[in-house]
Length: 126
Image (cartoon, rainbow, N blue to C red; front, side, top):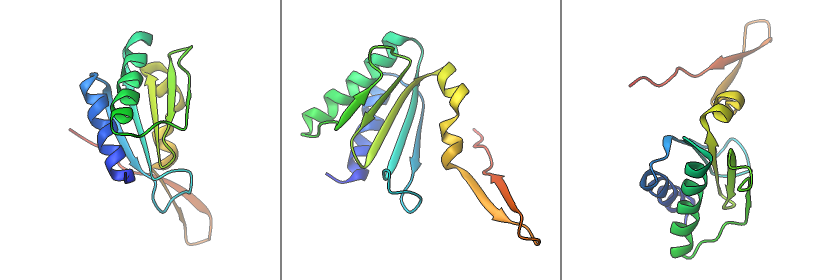
């Protein structure tokens, strides 16, 4: 199964469990860690676990098992590692605190003197 197929199945499973603010980050060409990060939020520990369980079940039905899972006992930030796709199911508080989307959406440029400038990508508007 390709990383794009995994990404699509994960997003569909998260949507089925009513995950909030599902975000896909394409990491191809930026890092060897993974091809995609999928980040979504839940409204409670039970909801966060339900979203993560739904993703695990959906991919297992497709013959894909997570290499590693972390965070089920706390239920505030669950990580599902599928190798080329890594899923973060987070409470909204944790997501606001760590802002992991920002780690992968910043652009770095140099000014005329060679000083490094961090440029934030424009926020999406709806």
